[in-house]
Image: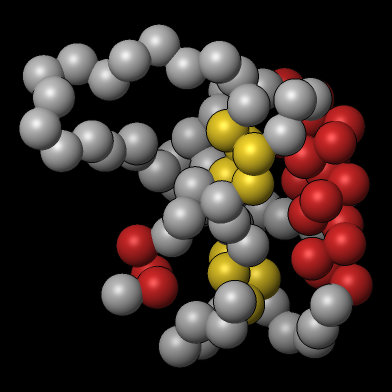
Amino acid sequence: MQGSVHRVAGPIVAPTAYEAAGILQELLRMGEGSVRLDTSTDDDAFHSYLEGFGFEEDSRSPIMVQGEDVLDSRNGMLFSLASQALG
């Protein structure tokens, strides 16, 4: 999706870092210009793929939830968040 400054990649949900990287790779092929990717995952393999694609970490994005005191445990399949930059 095209944001105001960058193309935005997310959310990316996949069973493995390898498959998430494959989805991202296809998204990167779909256009030109800079891409923003918000991720809060600590998955080392996924971060290695991001570095290989030329991404540089700026900061980690928090996962927010409304109406709950605690975020439910995650199943490890969320690799990229839907960006707050969309709104």
